[in-house]
Amino acid sequence: GQNIDQPTEMTATEGAIVQINCTYQTSGFNGLFWYQQHAGEAPTFLSYNVLDGLEEKGRFSSFLSRSKGYSYLLLKELQMKDSASYLCAVKEPYNTDKLIFGTGTRLQVFP
Amino acid sequence: GAVVSQHPSWVICKSGTSVKIECRSLDFQATTMFWYRQFPKQSLMLMATSNEGSKATYEQGVEKDKFLINHASLTLSTLTVTSAHPEDSSFYICSAMGAQFFGPGTRLTVL
Image (tube, rainbow over all chains, first blue to last red; front, top):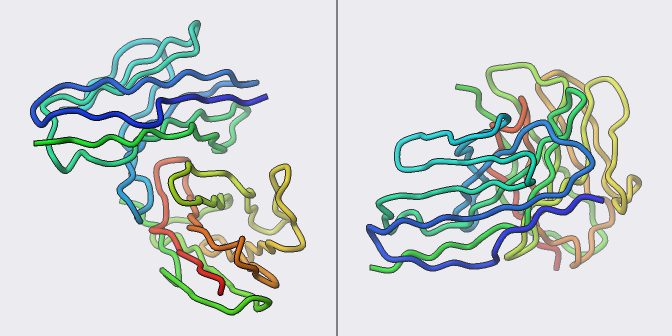
């Protein structure tokens, strides 16, 4: 079966660093996406990892270990506007664009 | 960049009526689109894969006779919720062109 787990909720302070973990057990793997979703809005793309290692993009970085079925999203220099839900999603193989989403993590940033 | 639009952005209907939601790719052709549903404080759940010119592929547990999908052109997919009931109230989101582009979502409320 497909199982993608994330912590339900996290809190952090403005200016700090937070790491949101995602573990997955899926029948196939063709990459992992991270999205940000504000309440009432559609998800917006943050990052995509298909090879092991760290991908850095400004204040956000994403890490993948395929052998461990593990990824994390690292948010630096947190801002109040970073309060949102963060979703990881695994892309199924065989040249499809089908995504299986994790449970999502609601992050609240406090002043 | 690629843009995906949805219409309407929100809809309120009476129980027993049918509601049609449109998903359009505005500056690219999409042979495949995906329909997701999201209940409050939950993650996205894939409902079906919409294929241009052929039948949609539904995920397990999604009633194909209740959620009719039509992908008649390379830029338009429609989801019709037939005989809607209050439990169908949800946020419906489409995506196209891989996993990077989501529509803004349609909030359906069934009274």
